[in-house]
Length: 299
Image 1 (cartoon, rainbow, N blue to C red):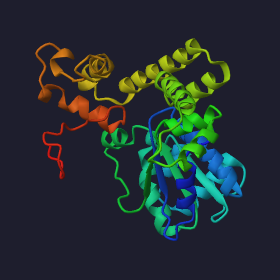
Image 2: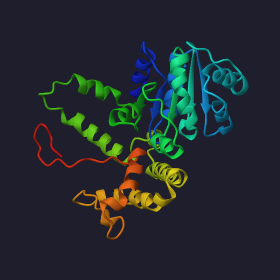
Image 3: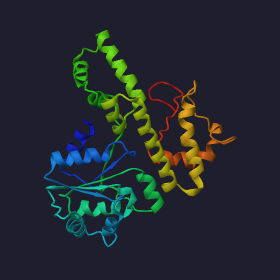
Image 4: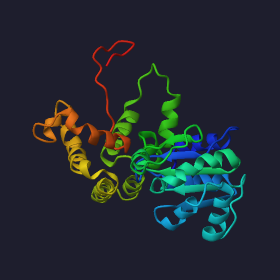
């Protein structure tokens, strides 16, 4: 499926001062798919390594941070072909499972800048904090990926021509009703299906909301599994309680999140660390309340 972030990846490839790239985003938002597509379209070869599925590969990064040795061993021992700077895109997927590989990106930047390297992962901030690994500050480029937006949903649904028409439509003129009715229907579909690529693909193919709901449930179940795997033991119960409470509370008429509804008599300071973990994981976003809606905004 067409994703806007592909153009940003192409811009990164063409930068004169390009550094190794860290692509972050929640699980199942399409990182692996778009990186492999990017590699096929913009490079002669793609060297793809999944550090979660093949944890023994992570040991290559533990010996030392010599990037030439690392790519030689990755190419010869695991991929069966050489990794060539200037021609190969090296993808280190699920890099959060091997924080030492994140630290190694500094030396790829310094010693082999002509090699295009992308580390992709979720829960990156959480993983680095847990392992107390060093982050290569100033030696990597960063890019955040999100689930599909409404424009991308329209593309996947076969309505790219509507976008082209709206882009050319004068802002001061009313959009015709026959166009707005179609756009509204698509938007309501998007609100129900969401932007996870697998759910969108199933919806476009089948129009079966039951299948979509199964996929959504599996994704949410996977997130809760990550709580058990990555969260501090002392915060696990609170993290899960907050996660389950957020949609229930925001569905209420006042759209407010009340800490005492998570746990009886709970206050902000009681749940602060758990909320911070979910924010670092990219699973929730805090929105500051604006007290005075004037420029500059005061919160």
